Amino acid sequence: MKALLKKGLLALLGIGLLAALFFAIARGGPLAPTKLTVAKVERGVVTPALFGVGTVEARRAYLIGPTVASRVLRVMVDVGDTVKAGQLLAEMDPVDLDQRVAALNASLERARNAVSAAEAQLRDAESRRELAAINLRRYRDLGEKQFVSQGVVDSRVQEEKSAQASVDAASATLEAARQELVRIQEDRAGLLQQRSSLRLVAPVAGMVTSREAEPGSTVVAGQAVLRLVEPASLWARVRFDQGRSQGLAVGQTARLTRRADSGNELAGKVARIEPVSDAVTEERIAQIAFAEPPAGLSVGEIVEATVALPDSGETLVLPNASVRRMGPLKGVWLVEGKELRFMPVKTGLVSLDGMVQISRGVKSGDKVVVYSERELSPGKRFEIVDSLAGQR
Image (tube, rainbow, N blue to C red; front, side, top):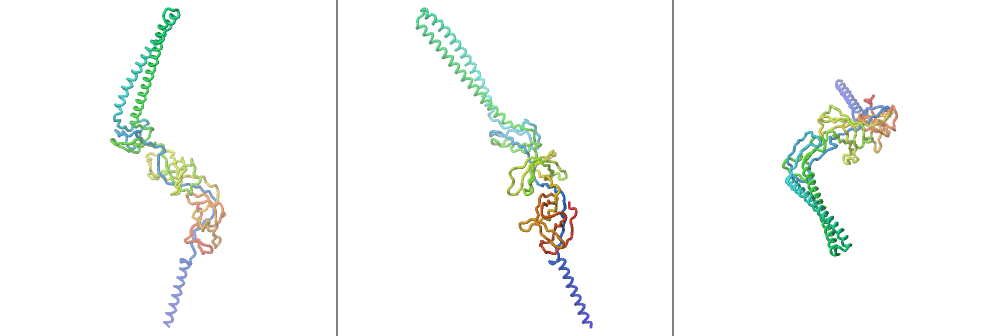
């Protein structure tokens, strides 16, 4: 009797264990219904925005250097210094330029004296020509009255022609002297300009960002000795995802946050959109200007930018996570009673808070799956564990 009772208890215990195992498999194993989180299609407004990360750059930067190869004599400013327009920043070694200018000054004075001498010679030649012309007229009159012979008249004609030739020669000498004076003046002006180019001055008011050469260094023509930027021209060069950049336009407002001051949001606007995008990273590049550049803003600093795009107006909206792909189709899983059905939809604008515009495929009040613990398929058993309400 005891043996039978013991066998019965063991049988009941085995049945209980089997029932518990079956229940566990049915609730949590592969046969268990898939747990779902659902949301209702609602009407609302999608306010899209673009988020990107970029660096601070200078819209206007200047490389200050000599126009000819030379050696750095002195540098008067350092990195971080604020300079005024026209301020002397650095000076190159003139080597022998000062001596060459002094030599040209002496040549210039000599050329002026040569011009003065040529002018005096021209005046003397003109005076001799006038005298010869007067004598010629007198002797012609005498010759006509038979007071002098024709030979005497001919000698006076020769004197007048010789005097005219002297005038022509003096004029040519004067013109040559004047041209030489002009040549020396131009040589001197060019040399003075070359000498002045060795004085590196600030083209605008700005801030020195780097010293590229120190005193004693030899630099080639066009090589920078100093780099200068205009602080007021600093802007952010930001990269945005190409897939979401539709609607980006110049003039749109933006919010900027510096990594160095993440708690302070700065106002800005899109100043320029580059016509060439990055094909490797699939990003579009835009420059965003600060409404008021903050103190301490540095070139190369990382910033985060959010650009507000035009909203969609009132439309059907869903959480973006509810949109799935089944092969080439994009759609949502509709919950219809105890059945699931995949419904292709057409999406539109997407906001940064995860909401997407639905323009076709569902209607207001439809229940759609937002999250599921496993892949879904028609006829699959499911259990709704959460319903997202007021997702806007």
